[in-house]
Image (cartoon, rainbow, N blue to C red; front, side, top):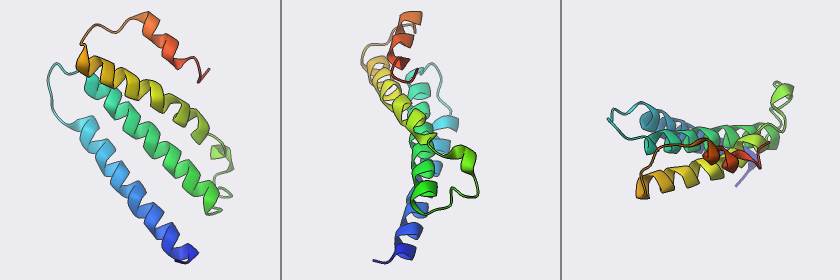
Length: 106
């Protein structure tokens, strides 16, 4: 598999992830706060994947300000997934103490 095929495959995967992110974000559901965390997870995953794509295939030259910003998004993926699972299994109100999960990002 040459580099051009790998680049196309990454773009197809990124496009699929973009479609999933849009579908999860804009689907109509009432009284489901966990969907917000799932949506955030997919958007962070999409951003991390696109940042890795730009660096891997040397497109970061066109957007140098995006270099190494995918790390921050990847650090936010785990709290988003944890909060989604917790809210799905044990629904409760979001508290300010839950912001403690964002500590690795800061």
